[in-house]
Image (tube, rainbow, N blue to C red; front, side, top):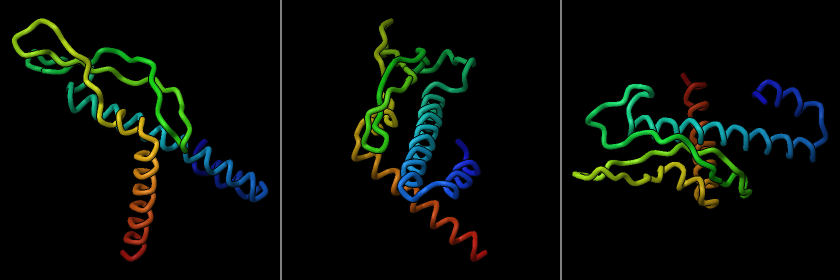
Length: 130
C-alpha cells in the first residue's frame, strides 16, 4: 500500500478504521525500511552482490527464517545470512547483523521508529523554510 492509496483510504473511513489503516501502513513501511537497512549492512560487510572478493572476510550465505517486532507484534521475516572466515582457518561462523538484532528488541524498534518520524518532520520544516 503506497502513500497515495493510504491518503485516499483515510479520507473514506471512520476514525477508528483510519487508525488501524494508518498503523498497517506504518508497519509495512517500517518492514520495507528494515529490509533495505539489512541489505545495506550485508553489502557493507560483503561487498556488491555477485562480485565476491578473494580478500573478503565476510560472505553472503543465503537467508533464514527469523522474526522482528513491528508495532509491538512479532512478525516472521526472511533474514539475510552472513558468514565470516576465521583467520588462518577453513571454518566460518555466522555473523549477526546489527540491524536484525535491533529489530528483535521491541523497545528499540519503537524508539527508532519515533526517532525516524521526528527526523522526517524536522526535514519537512527545513524544506518549507527554504
